[in-house]
Image 1 (tube, rainbow, N blue to C red):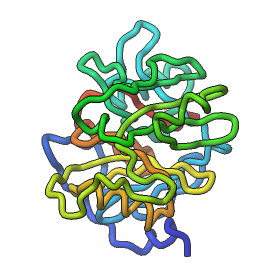
Image 2 (cartoon, rainbow, N blue to C red; image 1 turned 180 degrees about the vertical axis):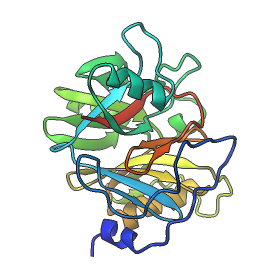
Image 3 (cartoon, helix red, strand yellow; image 1 turned 45 degrees about the vertical axis):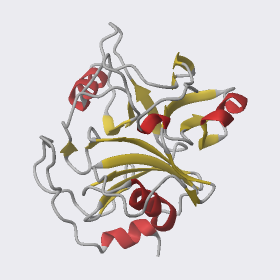
Image 4 (cartoon, helix red, strand yellow; image 1 turned 120 degrees about the horizontal axis):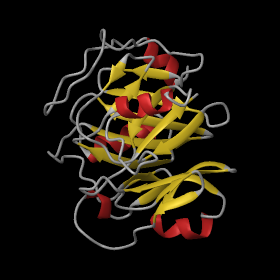
Length: 255
């Protein structure tokens, strides 16, 4: 039985609200797998998982509108797309950002590099090595260490850099401590064969627990941390529209 099918049998509980997070919803998210035009979605007591196949779904990244104003909120992005006869099915914050909402690291949109690769050292989660890049090219989706990306950059359609890497080649980041008391709502992205798996935790977790979930439950050999505290999810299927904080880079499925 696949992971998504197993999720159908799990008891879905209401998301606990942390740190001033608000969610616009007509009820708790359903635990059923959702098909159709939306990406397949599954929820559990601890995680919400969205699987995206880029062969059948249009995955895009967003930062600013044509006037240069950052979108910041899912509602603003959805309204902007609606004015262009497009519909936002799913969205998630897509990496760390500066006070002006610009990306800390690499950001590629529609094949154009908006922000360059950041190979500098520093403090904070982004610089916890190894960090990495999630990208989609004609060959499909990949997650690689930051130092590997330049050799693979040709033909990349979209990309976002973040850190730390949670799992690389099936190995959990050795910097993680299983007993760490640093627990937050967190979100990340993994690759399972040809499928992209986006995950947000519904309870505070540490890095090690997050990495184990990607590796052991989702069978992702590679996974990248996107952020914590601001971690947010938009899903038409789940009737969910998190408004935890103003956001920088956003990734989403559009039709």
